[in-house]
Length: 115
Image (cartoon, rainbow, N blue to C red; front, side, top):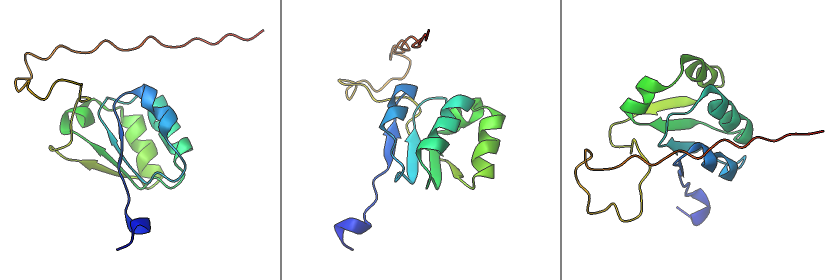
């Protein structure tokens, strides 16, 4: 196998990471609950998207319309328990108890106005 055959999974920790997607991405791991808009943006950005990996807890919270969009575009939705259901944080390697972990605040939405 040559280096050209290796494919890396792109990991998205928040909706802010959607800007890092490129048309060549085929497999994505998401560590946040995407909205319908987020799923639509993934499909627009990645024309060759084949699989989307999510944790079962995230899958339960995903909107049905977004799941239908993935199904209509023939994107495989892989639900596995060994996929992180929250973004890894720096310095959290020593924290083993999820109850002790504090949730990160979400970034405020950006509002663009035009005249």
